[in-house]
Length: 96
Image (spheres, rainbow, N blue to C red):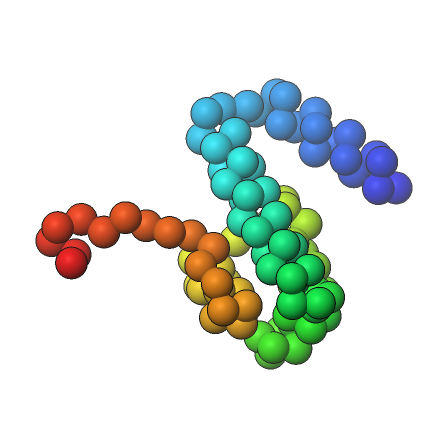
């Protein structure tokens, strides 16, 4: 069934490709890869991250699939749990 779902996703992406969607996918995969690297360096599994965040393991697994639309709130929760920055925003002069 998973191969069929992957094919459906691939077909949808081909039909609906846009620079915004392409950039979204790229950023999402970059963030989830950074989380995976942090988990590995800590010797954690996704279940450990879920426990640290007070979330269900299934929710964290969905986040780490690379296809879930991560919210800024969920990204910040992961950052706090892992003790790392996942997204770095350059401050403007008015924000300093």
